Image 1 (spheres, rainbow, N blue to C red):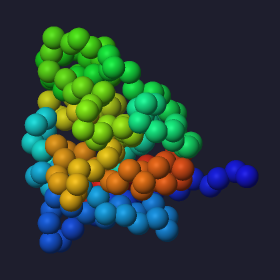
Image 2: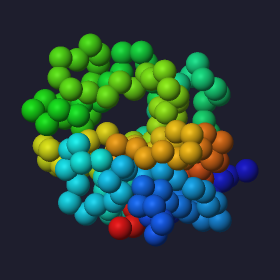
Image 3: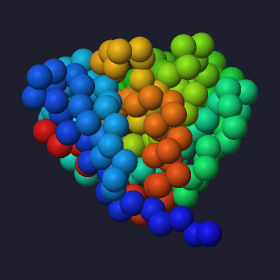
Length: 177
């Protein structure tokens, strides 16, 4: 049976706590965590804000040793121990997957805290990449209590798996300010 993908995921900031929100994908609705600074139109590297706008979902990464391969219409890639993500605006590989070890500032994709057991790469600051505009904006797993992120969107593990089943290469995510 062919699954129909949603065209648009919307993320709304909570009026009570700007660091939390609600993610809607068709009839699937779930709580989410947002950046520690809430949402922002003029996103900058290190500001702790989730960027406002509509973006492509580029691909998903997953830890093969922490559960089954997710089902999704997105391209999926297992995370390797040597995977990082450059967040150094001076690095020519800024806002891209990089091999570790890496001499410049970076995110480590293989994490012990499970936040990146499943990660969707949100197409923020990609075409073209502007140094200092922000990097590593992901949809990933939430901390207990939906504690704020560094600028990403985060949901519960069981919900991210349900969401991935509903998205494909044409699905966009819109973070509403």
